[in-house]
Length: 154
Image (cartoon, rainbow, N blue to C red; front, side, top):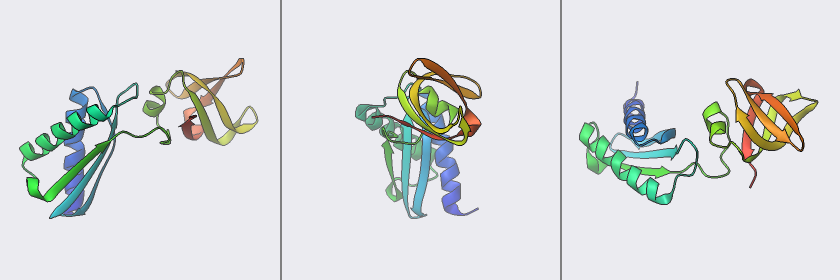
């Protein structure tokens, strides 16, 4: 395992701990650069969506402090950027969809459901292995394994 991979694992563990303690989900953690110049990029969101710029600033400070306290990276060799996932981020996991209940989404499927591979509707419910969407006056169930991605309609 390379040093960057080790740093990646450590950053993800610290980020999960810090964010979970504050009721925020880690969406993605990336580590780039080389061992003497490490760039850390964290994407986080609240379980119901809507992380603010102020939230990002507070969480960024908390993450930097936690990484420095852990002492695996000297403070002068890393930089950290924390951001929200953005409105146009593809939705792929059950957790992603849970943030979007009651919102209009577009879905792309790898197999047709009711004769179509693309659907747009309001997300009504996220179940264990499927989503229920309202399309006009009809409710439709989309199995999660068939969903390639979903996107918020903006």
